[in-house]
Image (cartoon, rainbow over all chains, first blue to last red; front, side):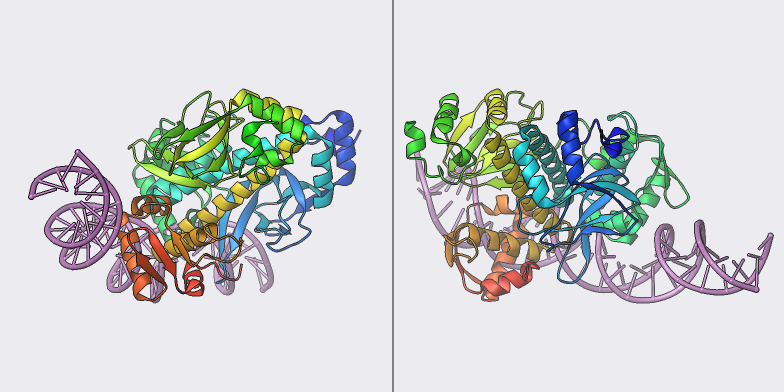
Length: 232
Length: 232
DNA sequence: CGCCTAGTTGATAGCGTTCAAATTGAGTGG
DNA sequence: CCACTCAATTTGAACGCTATCAACTAGGCG
């Protein structure tokens, strides 16, 4: 039995969880575990042999860089999430660690082979891909029509849910995983606007801030209303 | 041999093109062809037994409806494209015909079965899903940071490419597949802004308009610069 | 001809950006 | 423990882009 897999915290939730013990061990022997420090890059846009990876712990960001050199965060990857463009000749985006992160990486050609050899893995990745697509479309819906207030409210609510154990109820206390700059970037706003809106949320009694990153969510319902996404 | 498949214009490019003749015919016997008129809905957000479909001809839009009742176009589906949420318990978005459209539809449970029975189909759909994801992220990049001008320029350039035979070079003459309202909606702008920017593009000598929908692309390079996406 | 929908054009106002400066907080060395 | 430094954040004031409201034009169809 593979040592890494036996104690892997996402062994029951990652894409590879659909494999049998044997299959998983065979796959594991092709990959290697890797640790990225905050800011380290898994692969960059344009890389031809970009790796694929399952995130074991930590958090990643997927971002595009335009010709002026500024970044845009397009998606976050949470533990048990999968990243990597298996079918494109080169990577379209950068993937960077937001916090110290452990990953299980595979060469793209090995992953392509695995998808051929294990149909269940292909189906699991298809399912994940469709979920990613849905999440990205939700972001699109938000950034295209939503005000700065709605965008930030939705982001905070997402973070509160991600920080909670139960998938539906938001956590009452949590730490923001992103800096103001990263939040602004992700939402297509400026640092100043994010800061101001956060201040307004506090004045409205929706949240309390403790330090720079700590959030106490006082009125989640109000936040949900502002996000324009209640009742969904 | 299945009659519909034999003469299907997308038989070599749709997801089912990876199947053998026999497999394809078996799959075809489970589905049925269907024609939608402009504005007709394939399925609505919330439908539990939403169909899956390959688009044969025409064009579809995928859109979300918020609680105020206004729509947001999240994606377009072009011929040979696939639509349907196979793994969600219900559909998250509406899918509506933009023009008269022919589709090849399947009940979701049949599609789920087919994905299990034909691994190659699962891989083909995975590939498509990742492409959709990439397209949606491109839209996200645009709407989050781009000005109205950049958004419209990028949309026009996309249309010009979609209207062209060769995948890379934009068509010189084409018809806009969307109304001003639909373009505005898709880009998170207003009808008025789209109209004004189109007017500016014409004054700048980038395009000429013929009638309400006709476009002659005079200066594609300029358009690409404005879109902020050249050199990619 | 009148009606209706799609599109254009103009004037005004609001929201978020930009530029600038003050403030906080964590880390470091004395 | 304190002073220092640097980055992150907050706050303030003014500008600009796009939305909004409103009027007008063009084309299709009974």
